[in-house]
Length: 138
Image (cartoon, rainbow, N blue to C red; front, side):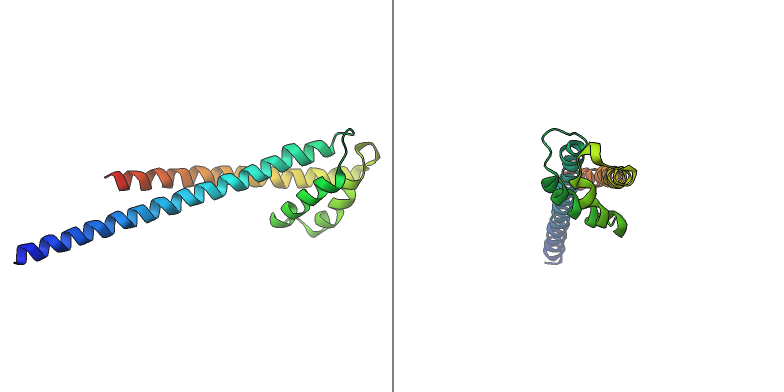
């Protein structure tokens, strides 16, 4: 009977190990997906909003400012940039002064910096996801 109890405990421990590994894989996969979405949002802001603000044609400043302002807040950029951003966005490129250009450059730098940070986090999370998959397969 002792052998049966020991076997039963072994099976229970194995099931617990598998469910723990499954949980780790789900967590890792979720983190990878979250990081990918955040990175895509920032890259879209760079290519769609900031890029278009530098072009005179098809100027939709309000739309771009509404996209960039919450991103700038989320990235915790300097308060002065947050205040100046809508005004800088509202001017066509030919009417922007050096300060407006500096504001847009700083926002772009902040977003690019966060994208690089997310790329590093994504690499680490993908590695953790792979490790979790291997642990589950073992």
